[in-house]
Amino acid sequence: MKKFLTAAALLAACASSNPVFAAGAVAVAEPADIAKDGYAIGISYNYKTTAEAEERALRECQSTEDAPAETRKLCKIVRTFENQCAASALDPKAGTPGAGWAVAESLAIARRDALQRCEDTAGRDRRGECRTSAEGCDGKAK
Image 1 (cartoon, rainbow, N blue to C red):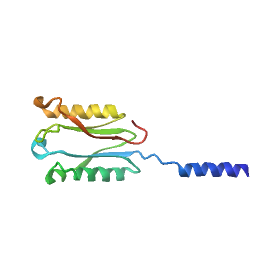
Image 2: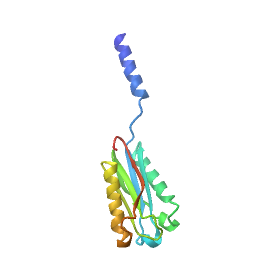
Image 3: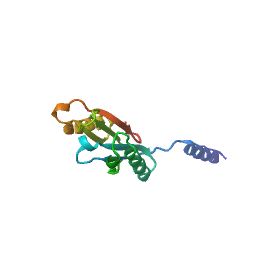
Image 4: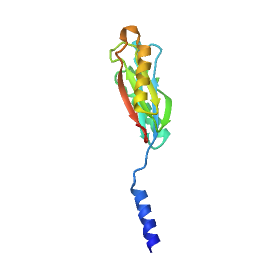
């Protein structure tokens, strides 16, 4: 009887524990002239499957209100990830080309890399203007 209770308690504990979801994706619409045509991005994380993460990232990208409809049509999955962090950065001034995204082992590194990519595309006059626009970690990553 004791073995049955121990097994039952273990099964109950497993059934009540929250599963760790660790699938994420990044979707981007990056036209040739971001300053003129805008930019859209969608980041998803903590999804059960990669397909679910991709669907959500595409939906987020395609619903970016600041991007024109023609630009949002360009949204495509550019990266999937598990147990990592993602971040995006944009120059907040309209009509500027600064935009970047990154996936990394930690949120600090993802932020840093996204900001660097944004700075690289922003141009000399806009250096230092990029800001993180979205971020998140999935699974156990932080």
